[in-house]
Image 1 (cartoon, one colour):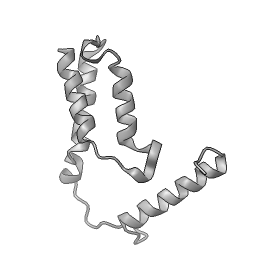
Image 2: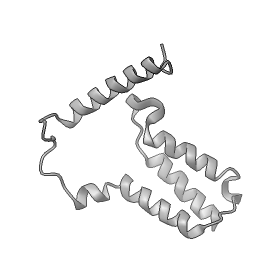
Image 3: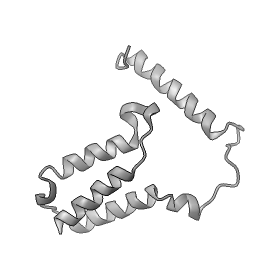
Length: 108
């Protein structure tokens, strides 16, 4: 049964989109790292809590399939500030780069 869980997580990692603007802070990148760490032995990995593993997979699969976005649709694609989603992404990317450089951990 562990092999099935492993393959399901691998499929989820393949389907999960990557946001190149976020580099190491991308949720897809973190997900891939966590799956690799959790399944160090691949299909032969022994899972201590299979129920929790299945629950975690189902939660991530719902996020990836936009289950909650479809269930709770937004009325508008802007916030109270009037800033669009794309403008927010650009602003967050710029702030993220600036913060990393200020801390000395950004690429130069």
